[in-house]
Figure 1 (cartoon, helix red, strand yellow):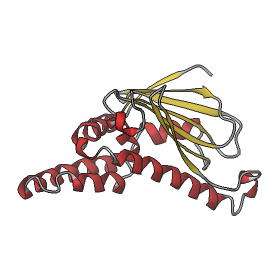
Figure 2 (cartoon, rainbow, N blue to C red):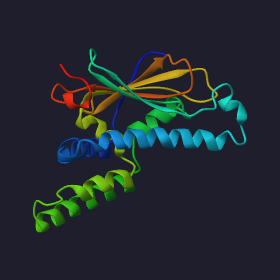
Figure 3 (cartoon, helix red, strand yellow):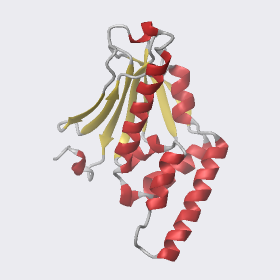
Figure 4 (cartoon, rainbow, N blue to C red):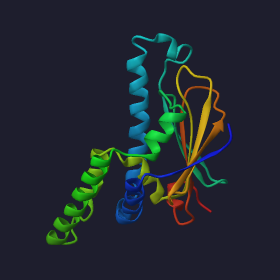
Length: 200
């Protein structure tokens, strides 16, 4: 299969701009959210394996790894959870339920107004909490990364897929390679984000 190019749902484009630029004082939430997603992927597979034990044959120990490549200036969050197929990649990382997205943006807007009334103390904390509440944490990766690449292989399937985006309106999906099930989220870190383990 050749590389396919998709356009983010309009609501996602709005969300990317909000998350990447409005919550800059809490950049560390991206790591919390990516680890949380990886944990969820492991939990989903653990649950499915109760009735489909073959899905974890030969690899029943679930794990999440953080991999720093100082030379390439990348940070990777890797798991051996349930993984995703082609359609799931497009649906999960290209769209968000419209109602959920709008609700997130409405509440974030309200949180900012409330912060303004309270003053600078605690600024942005409500927005951080909302990120997890509405399941949009993956997009927080664009606060620290120029490009995000997701390499994934769904449990029980042979094919692996690669999702790539710079968060500016489009993403691509193409066939890839992964030796086993699970997902790697690879962040190509911005030059100014040395603190995440990739010094110059």
